[in-house]
Image (cartoon, rainbow, N blue to C red):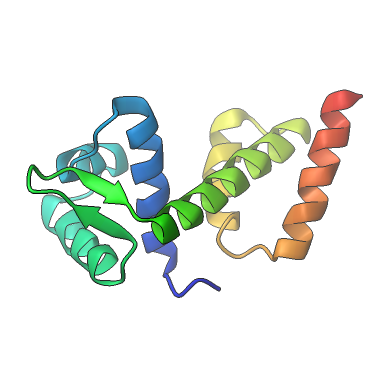
Length: 125
């Protein structure tokens, strides 16, 4: 797919969400949001940086690269659309969000496009 592992996609998605919410993202923000240990997040940030998905400023601010942002936006869109689809089917929001997070990584682009079209139609109805 994009040369990144599932947890890496989750990190990039979280950085994108936090950037929108906080304006500036640091590792500690990711630790708190994802409820992970500091060493785990630090290790992941090192890997994402080495693969060119993020940069880390001198003040510790984490920035998505163009490639990292593209992946994050794609995963976040999948998450939102799949959550919405599951809620439309009658799944409670919390469960829908958790399930969407698992599904978003493995679903083919073809199936995702069809689900997205269906959600769009259902919202208009």
